[in-house]
Image 1 (cartoon, rainbow, N blue to C red):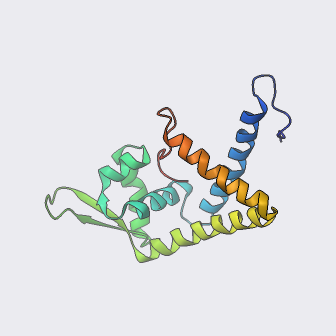
Image 2 (image 1 turned 180 degrees about the vertical axis):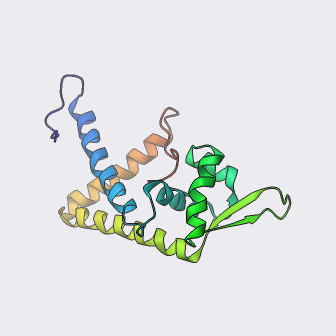
Image 3 (image 1 turned 90 degrees about the vertical axis):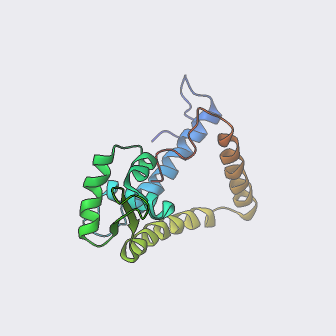
Length: 161
């Protein structure tokens, strides 16, 4: 594994530090997403995480939020609906529009995934002295705020991991 001091010829130390941080954060998100119930795949977990944040929406809106085509959402939703994690319905204004929403069972699965992630973040932060912890969280807030001002950086991305 590359350390922070191994920036390499094309990376300065600041960029290398953010690259290393990315690996840590993605690792935590990846591990959390794999805490889903048995039989729920990573793409299905991602769908549940995104849908939980959106609430009841047309499947086309969910597809757009995920950055996938509608047929991908249909396939993922089929299995989730079969296992009770997601419910389909119809739009009240236009009955031809299929809506999707997370069920109570699905919300419990999402809560478990997010709690696993939050537990990992707490464990990481607990290993830091209070002043470093405060500085790290302040820096995280500043990075998120700065990213929101850079059009080339998709802060929303295709939904959470």
